[in-house]
Image 1 (cartoon, rainbow, N blue to C red):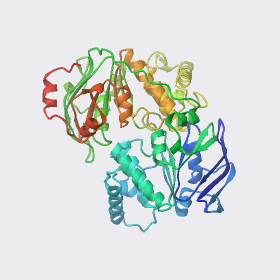
Image 2: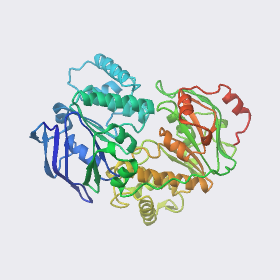
Image 3: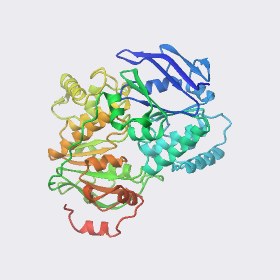
Image 4: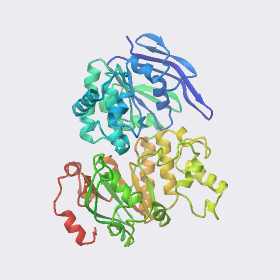
Length: 511
């Protein structure tokens, strides 16, 4: 008996038809990929299945019976679990309290905490049930969502970009778990832009483009190039990363140590490195090892650091505000898109003002509305953002399209220093190639770029040098051309030469 059958599902919004007569069949024990570029309608379709939104037309059959899925609560009762790309967690509640919201009212928190810890350990997802969500990194929030879904022992598990912030080892363990679940009869709908994952994990692949199904294939007999052609109509452009001589150090960190801002934060210990003009410095590491804390210090969100520990052009800026640093040419792309990278309720044009506050869009204290709209329109066109236009509300964009817009907004400032976290998280292969090309173009124009990413392949593709952050400490730098995955993997466990910080703090760092 077929587990799930969608028949001609249609969902239309004022500016776009998100799903246009989509049909999809999932069998028991099948791992079924849904592949498509950003804005193709994948996430909308998953929300229809999970009862988050109601389709305008079409029908759904569950275990052979016609159903109307009225809400996520009903979906969970039927045996459908979902891990969203954008998380649905309450910041002020603990991990266990968030998970308890979807469980019967009599659930005991202490017993639930034990279940969470056991499930997290079983699947290699490091998680502390008593931590408050506002203290978690994006990667840790994703672990909460995955564990929450697995606790329900679903008949159908929907995973929307589940591995985007997991380590290769954790991905391998998750895949083992998914294969075991499938062998036990659980069906899995798997959304990912990582073509190698789809080829190694999934039995069937439905390809979507522009809200329609354009094909169904067995990904195990396809190549990454053929899957890319099915998805975007072409192979992604090759990244042209050529070595070049970097300039002087623009952003420097010297012997930075910082205590925890809250009990669950990561303490930073004796961190030193430089970012040079005309280079990309990549920062690798497992989520939750101090990336958030380091970026907060560098961006000016956390001004507790001693002034001399962070320098811009040799000027001590550790106590300077984020606004002051932006005025000096520093740009920042946080890992959280909605809420920090963009205000969900504002338009794309209005979101320009989060980082563009110079004379081009603000004159004598007044916002130049036409200039703001024109700038937003230019970013939408340049970065191929699928949106209704500058007046589109930020929350109406798909995750990948919003990411392209936020990065485009910062690139358009032509910054001297760019700090960017997880630049291609959740974007399709074509958009990822474009973002990486733009980062390399910034580097070639003399910008000092620091990229924090848990995509090791991405760092090897665009970074000139690499460092690794583990348990609040940073490794020695190494030229990307001299590194390999095994070395970086060892360093991600903190296993690097022990005399690094002492040596680096005495001498400037040169290639």
